[in-house]
Image 1: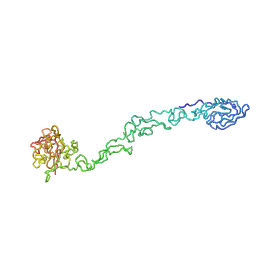
Image 2: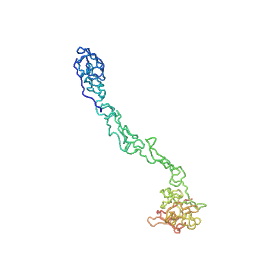
Image 3: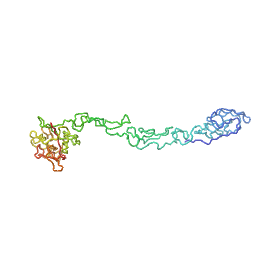
Image 4: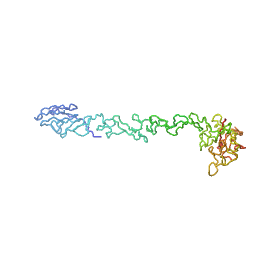
Length: 482
């Protein structure tokens, strides 16, 4: 802060008639340029003519002294009425003047005036009407009357705790700024949400920015990141994710550009999906079944492949158990109890059911065959105990995808009636002795664990199992009434 000249006010007291030819006016704030004429000069000299500025305590604008007589008895070195020469009155703006060594100087400044530049020629040149001088603050006023206001004053100290400067958030770089008569404010980076200068408690914009500097982004938009869709049905439905609306930062929207894309409506197939987009799944399907007999009037129809789950693939049996499908190249549905197999077939609709043992035997032995493919056993034609399911190394007995062995079929292309998975039938052969007893049902066709004799169409002592049996080598296929 610049040095401020401010001493006690002094009033120059003059004895009446002490200055012959001078008009005494101790406090002159206005009209100081009204001239007056003095009397006769001292010691016989000519009378002095008064100056164009009044004499006395101080003035707000300077004036010049009157023309002195040729001689006077005044102390021109110290007399403010005759400073430096007779009749030269000290009249410095905003100041109480004194005469020192024949020059007019500021003795003290009037209230509200300050001598900042130290130049006696312009008196107390700086007007600063502050009721009480104090430290510089941000208010648009020169509080310490040093000639510098607010940011121009190096003494101005910004507050240290006004702004939110939470580390790791957009507010981290915020700084306090002086806004003049409005006081202090905070300069926050773009993206920070404020209300009347304060950081908002709750974010109002969905913009991917931590607008309230709490360490969480867009937390007031609760659905962000959740799955959404266009309201379509079945495979026609387009799914996406809730994101901020790029056209309105107060809203969210469903971004449907993300994969997968919807599938056009098509004919219904057995896959656990609503392919025709009508709100129903796997309804009205025409299943690939072979009639028996192959020519003439059909007595019943049999699945061409072992039953599979709707979501089965070539490597996985799937988990959807709503309906029994029949398809080539997928893992068969095994490890199902008898009641599960029965229910899965009946889920196709009216007329669908588990096959009887007689029906499967008849279809397998058409034309008098002992095996689906002919009269005599041919090793490795069907997936029995002798077939190496994993080539190389030891003989591996494993379940294979349906229809894997092209020659293991009947003449009308019904596959795997011999080997792979042995199949539940609806033919009941007895009950267990346990309490409560389990019904026992005949199995058909042998499995990947069966030797050659167990793979024939008609086994003298056919395998069977209790209705609750759940084994990896027991599957089933469905039949349908004509």
